[in-house]
Length: 221
Image 1 (cartoon, one colour):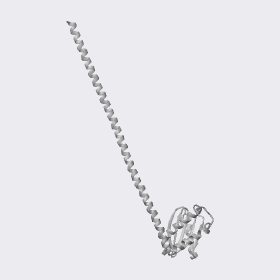
Image 2 (cartoon, rainbow, N blue to C red; image 1 turned 60 degrees about the horizontal axis):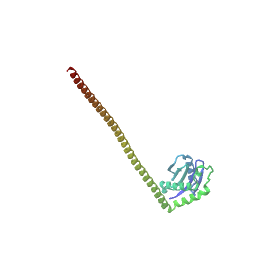
Image 3 (cartoon, rainbow, N blue to C red; image 1 turned 135 degrees about the vertical axis):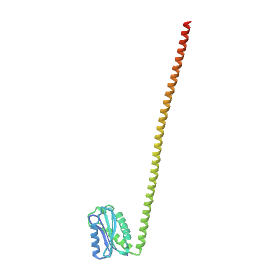
Image 4 (spheres, rainbow, N blue to C red; image 1 turned 90 degrees about the vertical axis):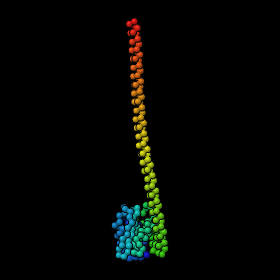
């Protein structure tokens, strides 16, 4: 399996490239592919043309393109480009998408491309790819685990909110019941006071009429 050509570019121009001596048409097709890419959107894709596979990766407005034989595999090419992406970012940072000088990083980064292309194209390449795949799987696993924890935490929060709403409803119902009870007790107290007042008035009237009757009887005698 072999990597024939690799190029890094931004929206303005190619920044660094390396070719292991493949045909000129292959490099030209890769350059044409670069011009058609939308660097505003991150993407990872691959296409077959003239017996070779052209894979590209767009990340943070910088494109990474490599040309391989079919035996190398599209998934392996994607891992290779991700590795090149990380190396380029570590070395140049945001300068990569800002510069407008053609092949501005070629002197510094072309040796890195050469070394990585030779490594991934050699027998050690399979081992390197396996390591990268394992690292990627670990990252995916950690992301999925974190997502699961967030979702679980969200369920717990939702349950707590439901319980809080339930307690608020119960509290409101209790407050209303207490208010109704106070009103009912107050009204019962009012009725009792009225009844007692009425009894007192009746009692006083009875005493009044009793005394009046006795006084009238004494006068007749």
